[in-house]
Image (cartoon, rainbow, N blue to C red; front, side):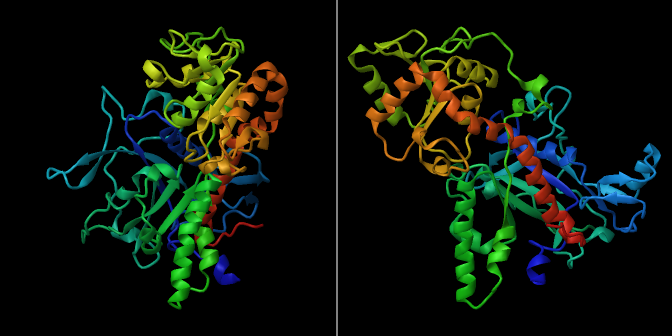
Length: 467
């Protein structure tokens, strides 16, 4: 119906600037994904009509729904400049933050982090992304005449929060100041995982905070969020409230994937690991595939230890590098260095290690569409997992069923590991579709960003995307 088609969530105020909250000075998969999102928004060249611009534009020009030029009958560079005159580009900025405790110690506060001549809150490995830092205090002050078009409830600023920081969503809201527009900034949560939220965003908040847009990185996260939101629909229907809760619920939740950077030609030169230096005090290889089984020592170690004990038996031998060898010539090695592999490797070291391994096993929790299984596949490893968390969703970990164990059967797992080592090429070939899926995630993320911009900008200015 038309009411469903024109539903604007949470307001009719089009977004003009997006701020992405990110932990300062942190190098892990989550912050990298946040920088990728900022890059994809800025490189996407999404334009919208400024408030003072004639929205019809030039009749000789054809644009897509985001204001980008598709064809120009005059086809000159000067005419392309005319196309964007009076239009503004949707911009995204990194908002680097740091948590700290209040003086009383009973409250968590957040502070914005800025760079100087000596240091930057952004690790240098993220310099490859078009992800400029917010250099002024947030929220920005808007003159009174720039108030939003929905009665002043929301501004045109959207802050996207990682799921680990849902308790900070309102922490940047400034008190009302009569001389300035201090309308609420709009908020979104990007569920890069489910488990890492640790229940901070409680069930009652899904009911009470229906002003929040949810971005989901995995089907696991989508299922989790929509299950929580269905309680909202049930609550509303029970109270005789909204009847259109299902269409609205769908617009509460948008897919937003991310990608392995070196799978994209855009970042291949700057991020494809090429070092030949081996990690110190960790498993080493000669660059060719060995009978090596690698695992993440940060999770699922109860199950991994049982696999190693069964595979190695009394013939187990612990090597100087921390790996454990079986009598049959198979080694098990943690992806890490130091005792038990507890020290983190650099991204380049991880890839170099994976290139020497034949098998990657992961029997821990899968809080989201994890990066390590994807990197292992790209490096030529056979990937073997359980069906916990996101691994239970074939759309998140699309492995052939023979490599996913719903029940932990140590004998079958060890038998499969031995088969994969002895017939590695044959088994690795079965993961070709998984590898192709991984390589397509850069393109998929572009489509996801298109969809998000369509929801928070385009639909709100009356330019509805055609099916």
